Image (cartoon, rainbow, N blue to C red; front, side, top):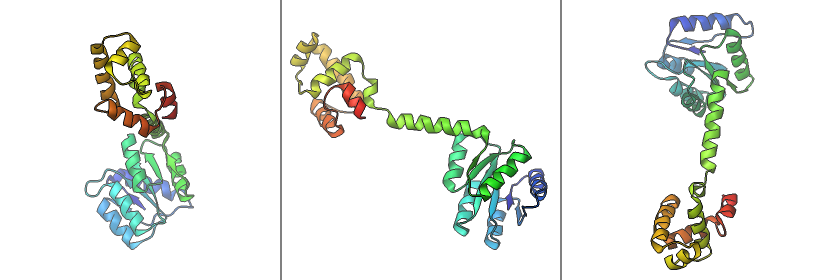
Length: 219
């Protein structure tokens, strides 16, 4: 089934699909609402759907297709290469994402991949998706300890070994108590704690006992 609100695109897709003897068009829709009505009346193996339609968008059509027929494979077919669109389509249940600038040969390849239950992403969006995945993984793995300055790390190490009074810390680092308090304020802010006891509780809860370096290895 093909769903796209642009006549020229629909006609071009129909000619492309008709050119392959192994494929058959069982429905053509010019809007999201029409696509859902056709899905209720038939059971296509594959839905090729535009994401941007004026009444019901392609994301909602993909969701509806899954509710109506759990075995259907949906291919998002769109002009948008943004990773946010890709994630939305895949989350909704699409097995692939095809950008409209692809050649007819590549569109057919995407169709047969989907029919074989294989995922397909246009090369144009693959870089965006991989970059977004790596960025999210990096952000998830980041530790608040990464942002500490050298002096703040020294302060953290001393507090972790239960050296907590400003006077003792100042003597250990050969600075004034006023300087220690300033570094403490910055340290607490970066680690999201309110005072020394709160920091000690966080150190224990996160298994950060020891030096900053050992704590970062555990994070």
